[in-house]
Image (cartoon, rainbow, N blue to C red; front, side, top):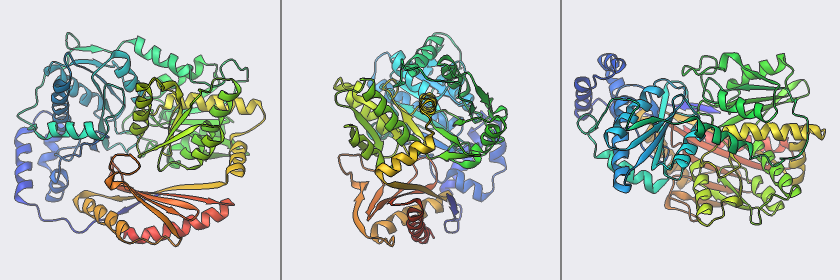
Length: 564
């Protein structure tokens, strides 16, 4: 659920904002789209476009495409790239960087602008010759031994957004300490005077990433199945949608090479298109994004629907359940995969001696119950797959990367191996097909298996509520609401414990996150790191779906009052 709330009235445009606007009007002449937009701005547009610099953090940059310091454009990309280049040159000799981009509006332009800045700063650039998923960027950084990586994407956001994710030499998105240092370099860069630029040309300083990297990635994915050597029918009818993003080529290649030939592609969502004409919010978490795929599934009598988001790091599914199709949540799919991987690895004697599951603190606690059942250690981390990737890196430093068997987060992100350091929807799509077909060969549907897990571990209802607060006033409103939650909160149920991660907790980095442990559940509240939203995660454990729903509804009504 996503609701919009307005902040207070906008402040009158001040002198500082007017000066910023005039500077851009005079100097932002490189992109004709920006020139036109700047000339047609009213005061409200100027205030929203210039009231702050686009925030740079562990998620890199993300924002609305357009003119201004609070927008994604060739200048914000150039400034970020110059700051990152200065950071890289301060830490590495003979540095190099890998770049990839997705199907979003201006993604190819932004990737070439970034490549030109890095090349001008004597950083060797490897860039894919065509759009590629986020996990393939993480893989390229590691495969090519790069100092860093950049992925131009806004993941699952609407078409008006784009973004710029930064990866370290380990192939993992930068975490808190590195982000802080890079931001320090960025803040010293004057967007018009200090950015070194060179023309994008394949040659001495910029080269294409070769086909060998892509093929090696595919081969790593194929090794992830826990049922290698087992014989079962793979003729299951599958509908797949890349949601006009990057997933078409790698997902279909892996599936077909592994024996899944009965695949129907959603034609309207097959080819890359940053306008996302049939799915304005291209997120497999959202039912509307899956509707066309469900229509295809019904028309083709398919048993399984897969959809990946534009940068192909999230995977959503629907499974046939009688005459209808049931959408599984990220938690449900993750729990099914975890249980299946553990069970088959034990059965096939491929479980490591000290296996590890990594999940985020907002992901279903039932994951830890399942892990305990199979003797798997659970490591809980802050929200964001970068923290899961960080844990894989720590295992690798201790020569224990093979102990990592699975990581997942409720927002449809999964990873079963240590070959990359970010969630991977290519891997997830393959594993889901393997799991689905394997269970089908035993006469078990995923819905039936999920019901078995709930009967064994107790029914869990997990919901996400998002509240949007746009503009500078909305930003201040969110800060006030978080403070309100810290001072006084009532959920209608006994609060057994409050975990405040703002000061650092349980060895985790500092983060503006609150977790309330309730009698029979929990509530987590946090501002999004990439959108102007407050996110609330409610988890309820009860004897039945109906009872859990009643409890969840009561808590969500209480939360509504705090958002007003």
